[in-house]
Structure formats: structure tokens, C-alpha cells
Image (cartoon, rainbow, N blue to C red; front, side):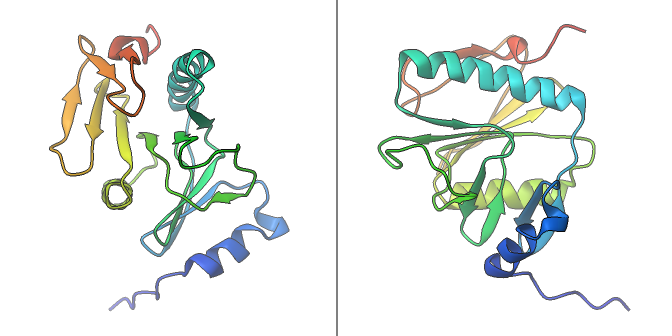
Length: 183
């Protein structure tokens, strides 16, 4: 019979993640469990494309800050690094400089990589929604994006569909097919 380890606290995680031997690791704390993030080139390309489209939008509409996969956020007791994160200037006027932004992002884009466990993904989505975050969950194998908005049913978009920024990113649109590189 296996004995479950007690959950790791946010304070203990932040101390552990800051140790020199972990400097090169991308670590998250999800549901009290430490997760080492391992992605692949294809997921990285997808994240870069989404980040690029959002960056171009934000150049013309400077309403917030965009983070890449190393940008960390405190989401309740979790410490996460979405593949793409966005936080409005209304909530965070100046570009954050701390390792873990003390606020949850307004938008979190998570790309499902081969090493992701379904339970971890579900926990992250649940915790993001509880913090008021909109989530775009990108499934590279299916070439779909499922959008989760707090208090609303999830919507899944395929290659023929368009994503929009709703009230969060007014006027922003992105064809789902443009997220995925030509194969």
C-alpha cells in the first residue's frame, strides 16, 4: 500500500524552485505536487505562434503584459508557468519583475505536451477558472483549442473556426488553423 506524500506548500515550493540546482528547470506547483515541465519543439512552435499573434495585437492595443513559458503566476496555492500568459494593465500596471506574479493571469494558454498528465491539466484548468482566468487549452494532436471561461460552458474550436478575445482582448481574432504550422 502506497502512502501519499503530503502536499507541498507554495512557500516550500518557492524555496525549492529558487535553489541553484533547480535554476535550469521549469517547475510548477499544481495541486500540492511539484511538476517538472518538459515540452517538445512542436508545442514550443505553437506557443511561439500564439504569443506572436498576441504580441502584434498588443503593439496596437497596449492593454496588458504578455509572458512566455518562463513567466510564472500564483494561482491560489499553485505556481504555474502557462505557455502564454496575459495580464491586463488594469490589474498589473507595470510589467511584473518577480519570479511568480502575485496575481493569476487574465488569459492562460496551455499547450498539451506528450508529458502532460490529464489529471494535472484538469487541476490547472479548474484552478485557473476559480481565479477568474480565461484558459485556451490547445490540443496539438487534434488541432483544436478548447476555451474555458469562468461561469460558462467550455467551447472547442477546430481548424475552420476563429478565436476571439471577447471583452478581455477587444477586437482580437485568430484563425485556429494559423496556430498550427503547416505539416
